[in-house]
Amino acid sequence: MNKVLFFSGLFLLALSAKTTAQVVGSNDATFNPGTGSNSDVSSVAIQTDGKILAAGTFTTFNGVSKNRITRLNSDGSADPTFTVGVGTNNSVYKVGTLASGKLLACGQFTTYAGVAAKRVVRINTNGTRDAAFNTSTNAGPNNYVMSFVEQPDAKIIIVGGFTSYNGVNRYRVARVTTTGANDATFAPGTGANNNINAVALQADGKVIIGGVFTTFNGTSRVRLARLTSAGANDATFVTG
Image (cartoon, rainbow, N blue to C red):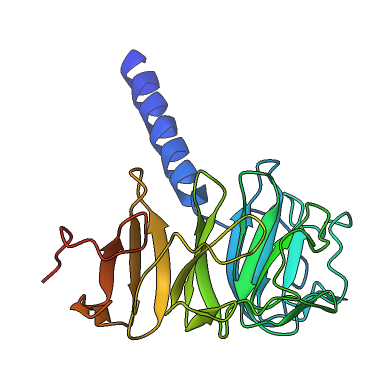
């Protein structure tokens, strides 16, 4: 009898483990975004409060007009406290949170909520444009911004297909101050000879970039390079 009970216990344990394994990775029924977006979502980010930012090429979310950027509650429902007005007039490639709690979005757009915002915009936590970050009256980047990363000092490195920022030559990479101005202390020279799609910040302040380029500031760097904190090519990073 004891042997039978022992075997039965093992069988139930194995069955329980198998059932649990089947559940892992399945759709989470507690997250319900309804009909979702009517076009691509290119970027998502999680706020510290668990709310979810989504951005892309969509113009509606769950049947409601949401031009290319929206925020959801942690259960997938629309967050009514996040008001972007008419949103952006073109694609958003990336959205993310900043250390201040504010948000940043970049892409191909030139307006946000009906106001000029050239391809990069800082957003208050309620969805309104942060006018203290000015890419409205200044020139901003002259072409799309694909990605960004925030430094510990709150300055932002942006990358993409642009060749100037605020009228200053910045070939596909630039650093932006907290007011949206070009940071003249970040000098990448002739920069990348083709588009930069990705950027990451090392703990030592150096910058990793990746994209379509084959040179950086005249030096062979095939699609991957590391820059110093001042924007110069880091000669110690050689990918061959």
